[in-house]
Image 1 (cartoon, rainbow, N blue to C red):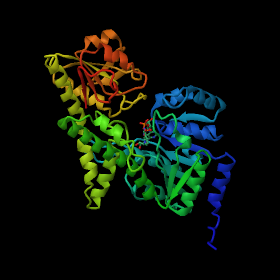
Image 2 (image 1 turned 90 degrees about the vertical axis):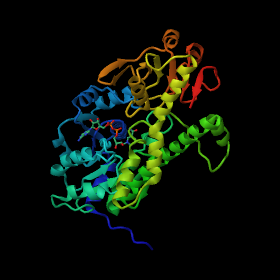
Image 3 (image 1 turned 30 degrees about the vertical axis):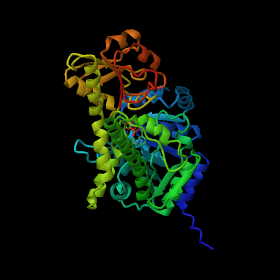
Length: 442
Ligand SMILES: NC(=O)c1ccc[n+]([C@@H]2O[C@H](COP(=O)([O-])OP(=O)(O)OC[C@H]3O[C@@H](n4cnc5c(N)ncnc54)[C@H](O)[C@@H]3O)[C@@H](O)[C@H]2O)c1
């Protein structure tokens, strides 16, 4: 019979506190990832403290207001009122936490190297307050090795040993903003600890709020899982974007090809071309992996190639704009272009890394007069100033020489666009046969 691991006194204590909901949960970084997670723990009956460096975010939360679209205001109001959820700027409170869950940003530097400085500063806050039996979990997407090579030595500096005095794990966040079916609670949660005791502790933590837990054997595997998932998307989007460029040259409608291909009931998964990648994950995470692979002397060719193809898409869209304007004998310089949708994907309000911003910049550089409309983004910081979104009306459509559909929000009135726009570049196939004259697809 396999031997059961001997109960670890600190792990048993943590487990007991988790089961009784008396464990104090700290979430460091209350953004798109941290806030939904904090809310989920608070809803399960834990007292949750969010640690922020953004005073405005902390104050907004403490007034019971949600600033993240997927997190309902009512939930936040109720949880804050009950005292189960609050935010603080005071990191000394970390000393009272049984769990510290790190959800800080992991951007790229200009050189496309990982910027793990936010992780380092969050861990630096934990180090002097680390206590026996505490569980530290890293949720931020990062390169394989971060938890064990970077975070662990920092936490062990003071003489504590991982798996014995405290627990450490990585658990990738898979939240998909705007997805109504899959949210924090029902997305299976991958967990990998620095030691088996750490894996058991983190599995128990998330088992209190998530429907399904997927333990893996190490933090590195857990880190790699997330990068595989996002690289898979980036590479497949790159492939289909290349196919779109190819089909354009060959006079084939790529959208019709995909629609027919996806009728295959096995071995095919549809990806769609578009104006380029956006958001905090897909354009960034694969480069965390290629950077780390390079350290081992390995060239991640698919990642680089997909990155190149995807980064070229905003230029392709602007080329289509020139073609559209050409068809009405207008030069790009001085033409009025209305961008429909500036969020990086449909039905959300996030503009980080949005390809719409690149498209706007390229068009402006070439002398076009650019405005935008987006029901989710009333105003936008762009090129050193703040732009206000226009309403989508027959007048705003008719005033534009070319309308570029860059993001296909469900609520956008495409019939109105089809009826009133002079020319249209439809990078999302959002018009779907409503009109063909003067419409330039990818
Ligand atoms: N947004 C997504 O859809 C998504 C999905 C999966 C994974 N991720 C990953 O999750 C991580 C967080 O992303 P996000 O979208 O929530 O970022 P975000 O920018 O929305 O939120 C991060 C928050 O952390 C705060 N912060 C920064 N440094 C801090 C520090 N030292 N201490 C306390 N707070 C600090 C910021 O003020 C901000 O409120 C990233 O690694 C990202 O790649 C994001």
